Length: 483
View 1 (cartoon, one colour):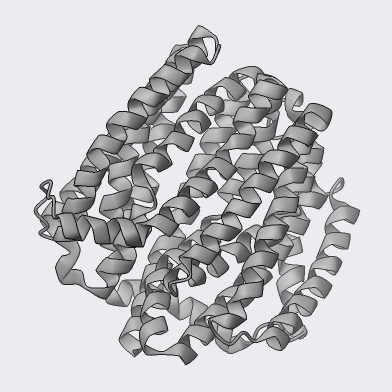
View 2 (tube, rainbow, N blue to C red):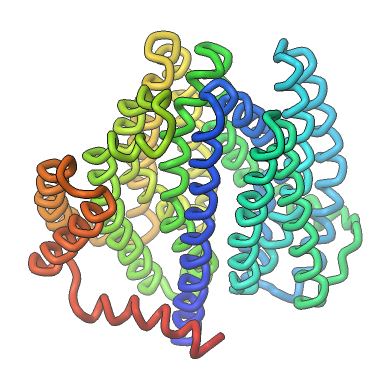
């Protein structure tokens, strides 16, 4: 079991570092886009991406989660799993590609928007296959190759996107940059799965096996569809109900909170196969691992959320003056960060412990609520209304998921409550300091000093111990020793 724990530490170290780099590069690219594009053009660009991203899930249908879970259980079936899933995906991608083209043409979008959607459909298809390749690799408890891709892909977009902005005022070259990055990622993942993991890719049609996959996948597929629509529909609705400018302003808040999700993503990417293993072989370790994940994300999410809310005006000034209207939406959406972070391990635990149907039901409820609230709030308050919807729906998702966890495993409510209380006290002092001096001290110095104040106070309050720091440090040190 110690070897498994060591592998989790190693994978988390690699993937956390890679996701930090990915988010830094991606957000830097977003800042460059926002500083060079008017809100209306930024809205058109991300509308095309959101439009095709919704359809992309109808190609994957939650198959990636099934691949990771089943390969983690029986690695000898990896080839058979991926090949039968490829057989399922080929007709799905053809149907979705045609649907995107048809709907883009009958939607009434201007010509430039339609052309952007056509181009964005190419990464939609390629990424759906790339995700399957990396899902198999994750099932082998290996995140190193995906970590490399996580850095190289946004780097390609940053370099070629910057060149595109300098050479042309059109949005088309920017979208071609996204296509180029997706082509690279697809080829890279394909080479790794063939050369490193010795898997021969070829379409297979095992009727009984495919029926089994479909049966297992159904709850994952519904959840994935609900989640993808939930995540991207707000941008589409904003463009339709409030215009491209509101969609562009909303992207400031959306991209900031999206960029911050690397921490729970890295944690759950590594923990998901472990949760599956512990569910079948070590229930006590399952409880301990889940509690540690929750505590860790509480400690991290609260200062990030409070810090951005307090320093929001300073942060928005990184963009054009036209984006100052996004201050309130960003403050509202940042209040949901706490629930967004904790929903990652909660959802991961439900899926890993064969409770994917519960997770799907919860996501379906939240999706319906999101659609209803957006249709009410967006016409009244535009991008601010969309942000309010994000806050309410993530709170509901948290409550629904947390209600079911004790039915699966023991949850240490008292210990988690103590961590939450101590973190809240520390973050309150941090927030007062940041608010008092934000106009007198450089924002980067404020962030550093505020972080020091928070973690020192939390340490003095007993929110974490010296052993916890050593454990985290060793997890990163193990990368060199084990790599």
